[in-house]
Image (cartoon, rainbow, N blue to C red; front, side, top):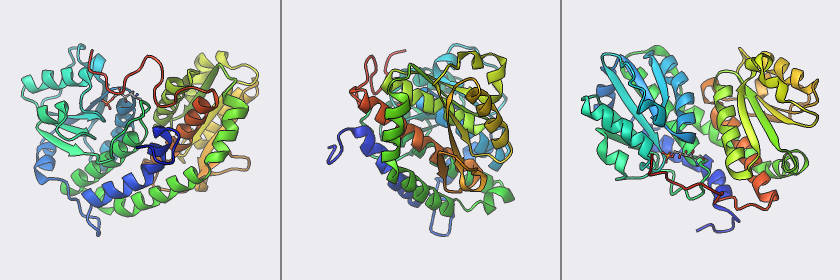
Length: 359
Ligand code: M6R
């Protein structure tokens, strides 16, 4: 039931702080100890490489997870688009471990990969929002997102829940391998900060309504740019905008602009930069300036510690690995209001289904 909300998407965006709090309580004790099933951690410990497989938004959540597994666990991690990986005849490492990210647990593209790797005897884990879903039943292990039903075709709370659960899993695994960085990472506290930071963005939603009316509703194209995990969020931000507002939107690695894509910038083209990482924020800002001098209407999403005068959205500070949980929320809201202000059916965009059970 949508309750007071005109569309499920807005309800689901608003639920995110609570979804994260619940997830944190479910999988971490009050003093921060992992409550993940030790059998899963044992199976993962034996791996020489992790493969994260997903489609659409779940693939994008996987990209963000790679950084956490490599930093907190030290196991090389590959992230694969399910429909590509299924037919790519990939060369596997000797002891791979497969993680399937799927909100619905029914995505056919991901299921084909699961069936392929199961045949070869490799261990598998499904992270899903739906108990007893097909991919949950067919994998060796399951971890549930418990985000509550996601009805809107555009995925929002499943993306942030998947990232948070990847963080919990990476911390738990790193800790069980005796790694200090993982043990010292106070994730329970961090997820609390993230929930507060999300709420702060959600409380500003009228601002996104305004920005969407002024700059996005009339636009035929729009771009998100960033580097590293900010780039990965850009991909998700652009997907949200294209699927429900039908604006041609792309996420670009900001350093790549000068290698070709800056040619797309015209007078008034909206370009949003995500700059949440100390190592790369100023580079991304420079790239954004270059689009501005070609006529782009620019927006910057930064964090308190990296903020500069004139930034449009300043997110509360959280550990740099977790900034995607915050930086995606403005993009979700911009997509939502742009779709709404264009008079489109936000929850049921044309040509799309909530779960894609054909290849
Ligand atoms: O249920 P899944 O997570 O496996 O679904 C994967 C994609 O179909 C899904 O994320 C899709 O990209 C969304 N509509 C994006 O908002």
